[in-house]
Image (cartoon, rainbow, N blue to C red; front, side):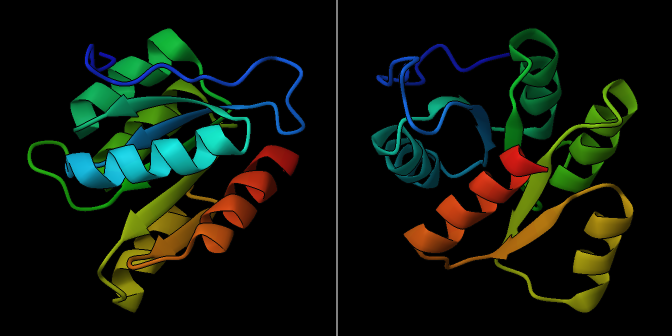
Amino acid sequence: MNRSDAPEATANSDSAHPGQILIVDDERGLLDVLSRLLEDEGYHTRQAASGEEAVEAYQSYGPDAVLLDVSMPGMDGLGALRKIRSLDSDARVAMLSGVSKQAVIRNAIESGARDFILKPFDADQVLTTVADLLAA
């Protein structure tokens, strides 16, 4: 389910970067920072705070790309990734994580993630990853 308190995107459809991005993280501050960054570049964003919300939002919102945190309570990001990919084998998902363990990264890629962003990240890295997801 989409977060009812999530800010609506302010971008218009004439944007140089059309795209609807679902951002999933259990840390509200990070959701807000990523939403603001992407909306400032013309993307439309939605937020979810858990794996369960991510799956529901993917089904109802149909985003063009997803930024999905690995570590969340309840259904974690890898579980949500697998569920999303079972709904849409072409889902464009990049994982977010503060954990740089090769096994976690490999598991995410093997589960269908197209990219992996390590926290802390910079704005250019996020924007490049989103652009690459949309170009794929």
